[in-house]
Image 1 (cartoon, rainbow, N blue to C red):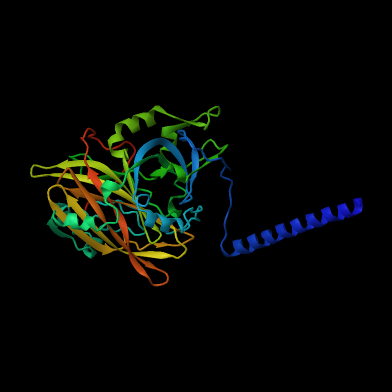
Image 2: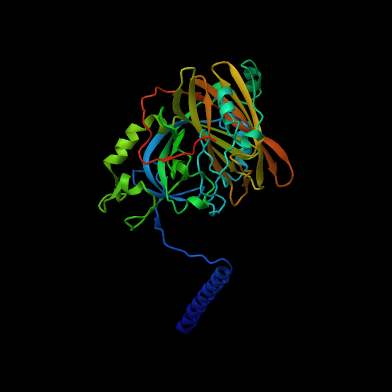
Amino acid sequence: MGLLLQVFKWDKRWQLLHKCDIIVKRSIKKQAVNPTKLAEVGRLLEAKEGKYDTGQLFLHRIFGYRGVILFPWTARVYDRDVHNPSRQTAVTTATATTTPTQCTNEASSIRVNAGHSNNSTTSTTTAQHEEASAAAWQESSSSGSDAQSTPSMGTAKPVESTRASSAVDSKEVKGKTQTFYQVLIDTRDCPHIRAQTEAVTFLGNQDSNRSLYAIPGLDYVAHDDIMPYSSADKHPLQHELFDKFLTHSPDADPPFICQDTLKAWQEKNHPWLDMSDVHKETTENVRVTVIPFYMGCRETPASSVYWWRYCIRLENLGELSVQLRERHWRIFSLSGTLETVRGRGVVGQEPILSPRLPAFQYSSHVSLQAPSGHMWGTFRLEREDGYSFDCKIPPFSLESKPDDVSTPPVGTSTSDERD
């Protein structure tokens, strides 16, 4: 009996060694074609229901990049699917839980041209914004990609009929409080993710010849997209602001604590960093999330121009790949104007949302000659089986705030001037 047991153990060991041998051979064969190098990042931790602390290292659940939490935000999430039973049923039939995606080399270094935050694989300005007032359109018409858009102006009257066609009126959608985080992205991962790495932009000084300032590698992440991990490395993240904002403290948990510079930076730029509303809507298993931010006001003797940036994520919850072909925006201003904008793709791209790479995220800007307004629209998507449909962009408000910050943030990079 003892001999049989010993033979059984050796047989199991041989099977395990055989499997390992196959893995090694496959790895060597794969490296011969596309050499790769694996390095230990850290140890995954159990996800928390409560808020994560400043200094917590994490992997992004959707985009897979490494990051560190700076501080939390509390936002009201308006999910139109929750208030539409038929749409909610359609969403639950899709693959709602997305696994971490592999990195891709589709993103590249970006420059931000005045009035636009173009984190695309090209450096040309795009008319995502396209979504500005008539004055802003005259300023941006020199952009090559802006020529693809066809803005038109009208009165405020059509807004009522357009919004009435929506399945759920915005007044029926109640917000739910959720936690988001301001984070830094590891610069080593920036070229490999399908999300803009210069998405957070600021207006420059009134007297400055620079229109926008950007902080590379700054992002907003929902609590559910945080995959926490620990690392024994004293410098686990590469970002120029990491050592300025955080310091290593081995006795703390997490072992990186906030410096006074981070507190001062947060307090100084709170009005432009603050996120208050998040809007979500799903069409044909494609979910669109919008987060608007007020940037400030540029005043001239003739008029005042109010600026906002907005971050949009498209996420494919279905099993079939879809490609974004066109965008269609409606921008209503409190001054009484209604603008319609159409164009190819977004930020110079027509991204494909596949089961392997289901998400794409970008940011853009809009300006109005009024302190408030709202936007809504659709993305024209084409499925791999040839079926095309309009994916709704949930309506969201553009609200201004008192301008109490007169200088651009410390440590930012400047954008290119307008052509």
